Length: 258
Image 1 (cartoon, rainbow, N blue to C red):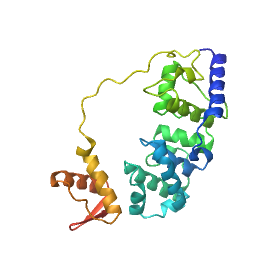
Image 2: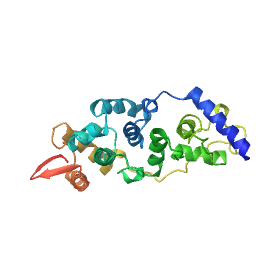
Image 3: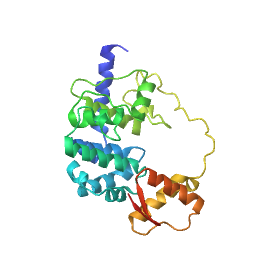
């Protein structure tokens, strides 16, 4: 694709985003702390679930300094229901670093921040000319058949636009080519979206160690002690894992959030 054509494609993408973008609360801020909160909450959690929790979190801890001063167990309790509690601990630890030292030049130095999150926070909060490649962006670029680049000074809008396109139009299961602003010239336009190969049957979530851990943390957060009705051979490995991860502490026969 020629340079001129690439520029036209990016222009179409940005115009589409300006018209179709969802009004999400983290898109109304350039505060790096608030952007980081949204990015960590959105990892493997649906937008509809994140919105109210994001807003509640910022009412309680509106700044990195406020979160840094919070008790670890309070942070874990506030995260209950979002899954993957290690994200809460990473966010808390990152806030403590920022409160003490400020934001590092290389955002990957913060706990829980990998290449994608660093590029997202870098572009959305600090205006850096970086492409944030999440699964949606990677899929759009692959189907399009070329890697788009943001125009000067527009990396934030560009990244949001590609993410939005992948989340709402060029989705994994359904490619809505008729609604796509980039369909003309797209190497995959009109083709059915690839369906993943049938996976080996997995155990029910209720039978997994993660399910047990997901019952233990809310129960301890509520001060109710360990949940009842879980067989010892399933409860004990979950408790050991939570203790090893620093999310639960044990004193004698009593357990509490770490």
